[in-house]
Length: 206
Image (cartoon, rainbow, N blue to C red; front, side, top):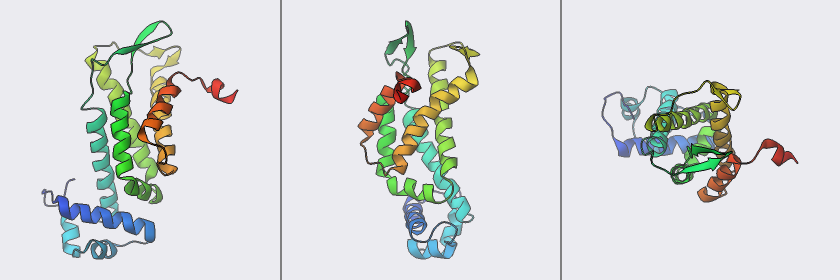
């Protein structure tokens, strides 16, 4: 997390994050002030301003840190040698590897109070869209590892739409899980994502 001084103070920033999460739940994001955050974190206002410009900058930096962590889990540890699966007579890479997804979901569950606070702070869709961007990066990264030639059409669907369909399905499942309180285990959500890969929308309706 970048601070005004360019130095990272994990302990102080952890206290500020905890205070932010608590105050969003108790007062709401709009009502909280920097003084509230400093008092709850047991720091002075000057210390807060050494790390963040204001509460909006704090929220954005927390989201940025979260996306950075998810990127490391999902993208930077990608395994291009993961075995392929057979679908409709074609060999395709399982771009959303269960092991990586499970680690990402466990990360979310471990920090659920923060994700719950963000969803109540009026900025949850920003995090949702950023999460979709991470999934897109994952697909692009794996394609580069496999030296796959980019296509403009996938099964009759323009590439941009095909990408959106793919990442939106996974992101929506994860987001519903968060809004439901992360009640299911990461393994259960991974199973739902796996089943979604081979389940047509019409199969759900009928």
